[in-house]
Image (cartoon, rainbow, N blue to C red; front, side, top):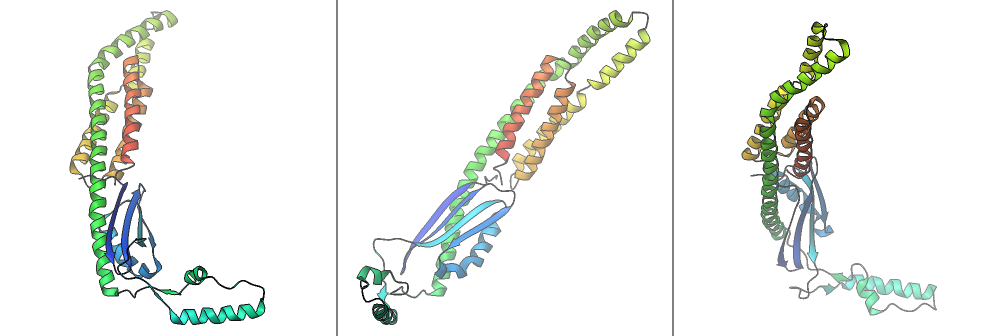
Length: 288
């Protein structure tokens, strides 16, 4: 199976503190880059999350968010922290002495003061189990979305390789005849330019031309690379880097074919292959 590097998934569950949410989103990257945005009271679970994600993912810039989402109905409401209230009252009284004209603290100001609302204490063992279960659920959904997109990418690459192969198969039988016709035309021009008496020089020039325009090696290498791309797609797994390398090789052979093209048909074929290879490279950049 081939996976895309882009994906999204979220998993949620109710807890005494509210709705706990774990969100995964990813874009393409050369390597595996894990980024975490975790609520402070849950920060201790980052190593476990990193291990879980690293065991199933190999490439991509993955953003993991773990937080308590806002909920209209909390299972356990926060309570007032009496110690924090006493401290705030003392500070307010002292501030009133220093600034007699200042307005007193409003109830809304008091409730927003850090530490005044005491959240229910977290059961660390239960919370760890909950976070792990959330991560596994989100990860399965995340991998499923990447697999669906990866299948589409693989299909797109396969279709373009098949098109390149058909285009090459159409042109390849025409190459020998086209080169022979072009050599004959070149020989006629050489005879006009240097005279028919110097046949040895004409043959030498034609031999050099034949060496420079021989595209059989490039055609063979292109077919070999087509075969390897299709084999890699069939094998599946983390194939992005391998396919990107093959796309570079295909582009190199297409460039050489274009530079050696002695006829318009071969030149058009090489340019079309270059365009298709570029489309393939765009697709494999998103594969894991």
